[in-house]
Length: 260
Length: 198
Image (cartoon, rainbow over all chains, first blue to last red; front, side, top):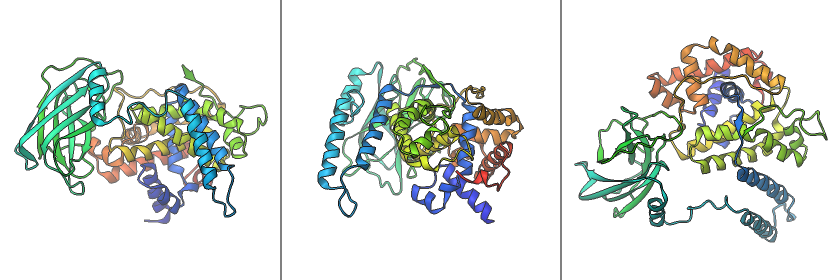
């Protein structure tokens, strides 16, 4: 492979998001990002606008962050160049005060709620909530006393799993992965994300969200996969599955496709 | 509401010859807000394409602009338009963030072919975009499919390989070849100085 090919190969990795900041800098790509820039040009050519405005609250947040960064850079410094503790506290306090003054976007609602409260909140506030009982299979990870339930909000495209009797997994060797079988999509289920069951493997409540739009959930299934999950499951190890009793008809706004 | 897609090169009265990023790099505070106004829609559209969760998209957009302030000094108008530079930084930050939170980079694939429409605005930017749009059909179908999936919709190379039933190496070579053809169309043959800087 020539030096030019190696350079292009590194640029390709950078383009795919496969390099960390440090790796990118080490490879000297900051001054040579041709493929990334060409990709940006291609992206704009395919999506030339006009574009929807960003939310006004977000614009305020970014402007505020920029102002705080600038003030932070001008904060009192120690002789060795490090900001003083007092200076840091002052700027943190100032930032907190300004942040707190802007209601509605910080902190985001629900972040500090416990999982149980969040489940209850979802059940109480979501427009459509479907509960699906999961049945355990004979996979080695499933105890005889397995019980499971999926709580799914069609309008919010997310939900929770309540699981008991599923063995704790070693994330280094395998992880559980949730799949949402969509009657409208047909062959490929939608990825619901990977999750772990920690020790002790008692009852666990696991939040999840559909990675693609789900139009008509027909069933939910949990498989055991390699760490990080898979794009397409071989379904060699299905731990639990549950069918939706009454499929919902609501269709999300955006179109989509599966990758599973 | 729709934001303007025009180039900011003429924006601002204090230094009309400077672009927004050049003004930011020289410490012009007013340019920060103007830059958010000018490119907010573009950056937001990229983030929303990759993140359905609006909170994630918002966090990504904030990271993009933080990076833009930091990278402003590296922008060189002689190499490429400011719009392309902003889009490059936006795509880089969004993809980096995406790789951290999910293996599934895209959540909304279009049902039909993407319709490339001519952008209004700065003639220079439009000319670059128009060149690509006009020559798009010269790309081989498999190159275009790979670029659409990878560049526009954000699939990783391995995911594209699975989706298109194509060897991973072929996906990478199609991506590389397709983008290098863009470079040729933009008047920069492989190895030219102009094409190798950012």
